[in-house]
Amino acid sequence: MEGLRIERLTAGYGRRMVLKDVNLEASEGKLVALLGPNGAGKSTLLKCVAKILKPKSGRIYLKGRDLTRASLRELSKIVGYVPQNMRPAFSTTVFEAILTSRLPHFKWGPNRTDVEKAEEVIKVLGLEGLALRKINELSGGEWQKVLLAMALVKEPEVLLLDEPTSNLDLKHQLEVLRLIKRVTKERGLVTIAALHDVNLALRFADEAALMKDGSIYAVGRPEEVLVPESIRDVYGVDAVLVKGPRLFIVVEDLVDEVSAN
Amino acid sequence: MKWCLVARTIATQYERLTWKRTVLIFSLFSCLVLAFIASICVGSAYIPPSQAIAALLTRGGDFDAIVWEIRLPRALVAVFAGAGLALGGVVMQASLRNPMASPFTLGMSSAAAFGATVAVVLGAGRFLRVYVGGFEVYSYYPLIISSFLSSLVAVFAIFFFAKVKGAFPETIILTGIAISFLFSAATSLIQYFGTTEQVAAIVFWLFGSLSKASWEAFWAISLTSVALLVLFMKWSYRYDALLIDEDFARNLGVNPERLRLITMVLSSLVTAVITSFLGVISFVCLIAPHIARMVMGSEHKHLIPASALIGANILILSDAASRIIMPPIIIPVGIITSFLGTPLLLYLLLRGRRHWY
Image 1 (tube, rainbow over the protein chains, first blue to last red):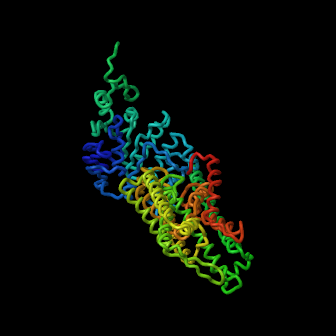
Image 2: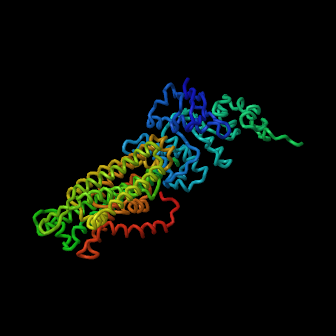
Image 3: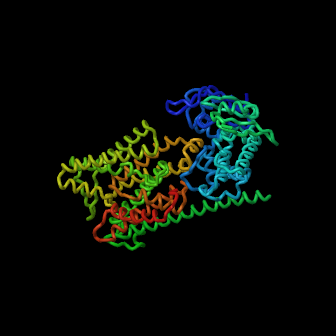
């Protein structure tokens, strides 16, 4: 099968195993939403694919190629990872940060091609106005788009995003996800985004993988996966599915509450 | 059409910024050349600039002995030692993400002092005085070697500890401080049992001084500094990536632990070489990178050569000052840099920058 295939992945920190025997497949040109409560293993899974965390066992294949065997440098050209909280200790301009993200392709430093790719990704994401601003002066939404640019400028085949919308206002949430969906389609990327907003997943994702306690609880089309029964089981809340102009989940209450009325 | 124009502007502005920084580096270099010539001119016997340049270009003139035996090696050593110390500082600060990091923080000065102390107490402090045309030239190899070996022990102790416990900045810094105290304690102990002359010899050795500059020192220091300058410049982008975020750097193919360890080892080595020959010259490794950052920004492609040039300038000018403040006494340059360091650092603190980078 084309795309990304994760086989029997087990990983954790120290002695604590967070991921247990995880299997997941993701196709090119499709956005997979990784969902689940805190501690379910979403970030850990993404870090394993990005080789930031070394898995205990299991294999990750991209178009038939074993990524777990690839060197850090080779992998850095293939996988673009956007971490959740990135506070740089460094104050540089947006353009230079994006240019530096071309590092895996450098020989002695950036050349004409690298500068052009940086310009191109700035154009594609609509960041022209920000290009010469300092990265520590950006708002949450602006920074998230820059992070996306920094991952895309490497021209990866896989795009991993750890909660790209958690710090964003309503407008930027939609903007960023729309951008992600667009580049995924246009460039044929395998995109996996850990999201905590189930409605964003319903709206934008092509596939949803719901995680619970370190394994995949359910995977499939978002509307098939995100049903009230599953949400109750995984998140511990009662929710209803509302059919408006589009489907969305409305959370009603915690499961253990006994309503007085 | 519009996007095309805007994109051109971004790249052009970037190129303009790069050009500005290149010009600055060139100015620093010119400043260095002037300082170099000034350094040849001043001293107990003042040589006018035109004659100084003539003496450099043709041998056998009036000032040949002073220039070629004393002032030239001294000036050359000042340039490369200043550059080397600054280099050690700037890459350590980047790799440990700490503006106060330097090889001295990790105990290089204490280890070197210990090595020197051991050598002196064992009788190697008797430096060979060679008189050349009425001028003294010092040469004391056992002390240099002992000091260097002692520094190596410190470097590898920190290296192995970090390898086992994980090369986190905190681990490296704390281990360095512990090593520093250990060597200090050992040094004090030996000094306690030494004779007055030995203790005096050690104290005087510890003052970083360019009077110990020799042609051997020049070759050792310059070759090390230049080799590392080239290597560190090649790694500039890795340091930039590391400073943005560690996981992000990993996703760019940079191994943070490996980079940290090898940076620590190499920067400590160049500092060990310089300290073994010249004694402890403090503050250059801290001050030069900070000044460079204020002037250049934090992109290491420019920051690294700028720091080296500023370090070279600071040392050579401090050395010139050391010879003209109280002639004919030459104040050890380490004392001058110590005095310079504190007000400069306070000034930087008062400027109140939120980000050190």
